[in-house]
Every structure is written in C-alpha cells, then in structure tokens.
Amino acid sequence: MSGIVSVLVIFLIFSVGFIFSRFRLWPDNATDTLSAIIIKAAAPALAIVSIADRFTPEMLRESLILLLISFLHLALMYFFGKGLSRLLRLKSGKRTVFEVTFTFSNVIFIGLPINVITFGEEGLPYLFAYYIASLTSFWSIGAYEIANASPKAEKTFSPSKIFSPGLIGVIIGVVSAGLQLQFPAPVDTSLHYVSVLCVPLSILVIGAKLVAFFQKPPSISVDDVMIMVGKFLFSPLLMLALLRVFGISGLAFSVLMLSSSMPCHMQTSILAQYYDVESEYAAKLVGMSTILCLFTIPTYVAILNRIA
View 1 (spheres, one colour):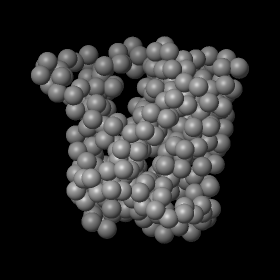
View 2 (spheres, rainbow, N blue to C red; view 1 turned 60 degrees about the horizontal axis):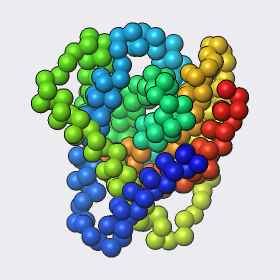
View 3 (cartoon, rainbow, N blue to C red; view 1 turned 90 degrees about the vertical axis):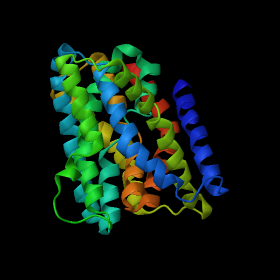
View 4 (cartoon, rainbow, N blue to C red; view 1 turned 135 degrees about the vertical axis):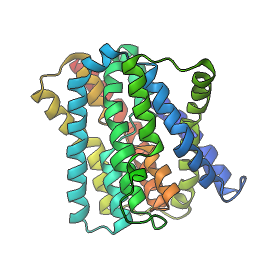
C-alpha cells in the first residue's frame, strides 16, 4: 500500500502540470522555461547534495563492487536497447528516445521514496551506489545521445554534450564526498534550495507533456510494449543474474533488485523537451511506465519481502 501511495502522490503532481497546460493557465513557453531551469540548475544541484550529503569516503570504497554491478547492468541495458531499436527500425529521434528510456530508470524520484518506505534508511548506501552509476551514465551517454539527435544541435562532437550540467554536478558531488569537502554555508543552503525544485518541476513538465498524449486515444505500438517489457521484466532479470554472479545477498540484493524495476527516467522527457527530440513520445513512455509501476512496484516489494 505504501508503494501505491508514493506513486499516487506523483500522479497528483502530474495532474497540476496537465491541468495548467490543458486549460492554458500558464504561457505556451512555460514548459521550455521550466525544462531549462531543471537541466541547467535544479538537476545539477540535486546531484551535488544527494551525493555529498549521504556518502563518506568509506561508503564510496565499500560501494565499488555495487558500482561495478550497476555500471554493467546499465551498459548491457544500453546495448540491448540499441540492438532492439534497430530491429524495430525506428527513426533517428525516436530511436534515440527509445534507447535512453530502455536503459535508464527513475531511480531517485520514485526509487528513493519507495526504497526508504520499504527498507528504511539502511538501504540508502546501496541505492545511491546504483544512483551514482545511473546518474553518471545518464548525464553523459544519455544526455549526449539526445543532444546529438536534436535538430537544433550541431552533429559534430562537442565536449559540452558529454560534460552536461548534470554530469558536472555528479563529479562535484563525488569529489566533495571523497575529500570530505564542506561548502560554505551560503553555497550549501542555496544548493539545497535549488535542488528541491528538481522533482516537482520535472513532474509538472511531464504532466504538461501528457496533454497531447491524452487528447486522442493513445495507440500502443510494438516499441511501447518492448519498453514496458524492458523496464519491468528484462531489467530486473538482468540485475538478478548479475547479483547472483557476484554473490550479492541481503539488503543490497533487495535494494538493487527493486531499483532495477523502476519506470522510465523522468529526466529523459525533460531532455527531450529541452532539445526538441520526440518530446511527446518520451512523455508517453514515461507516463505509461509510471502508470504500470502502480501495479509492478507493490508486486516486486511483496516478492522481495517474502524472499528476504
């Protein structure tokens, strides 16, 4: 029930963005403005404070094996997604969104509250090991792929496409935690204030983008189904195999298994909106997977609690 409540809270915030966009209660460019705030300020701030506040040098060292497993999981998901997108013969922009949504899950916006409710704060170090891997990969490979598919962007390689604001935030957070650096009080307070904007603004933008999805009867295509299968079946099965190979058990096993079964990463839709790359398709996948997780998360929680 607690898992269902957490998902319902997200849908209530979705509805605010949906209503504001549906009835034109904010300017037409509101979602573009909010997306820019999220990408350039709120997401990097969240990355910094979430890592710097929760990790110690000892925790970083102890998390190395879990980081390795997490990176392997994401790498395999990425290559499977690429192969699948080519089998489905998706077009350039849609193919990119498919690959990114297939690979990355909503580890923090939904994964964090669900894990805390289910396993308590004792599970946070294991969650954040997966989170660091996911965040680093998403804001490097994921952000680069979407930026490179943008009709507004040059197709030549640019370091700025790799070193996105989100990845820079991850790097600052890891360095701060590893060296136990303390930010000056005004900087630390400002980062925390800006970081709390990330989750609600992201959900508002996605809710706004779902207007187009619900204005006409949603059509479910083969690629939509494959994304759902990838998120809720293939991803946890792949994580299960990796955890068995490396002999991981106990709380770390449960946290990583649950984290690997989360819906599509919300920031994919935000990046797609920002770079004008199939943003409605991205919002559709995020919305569909978040709806489905209302049923899948309680199921996985029940299974993990039984086998723990």
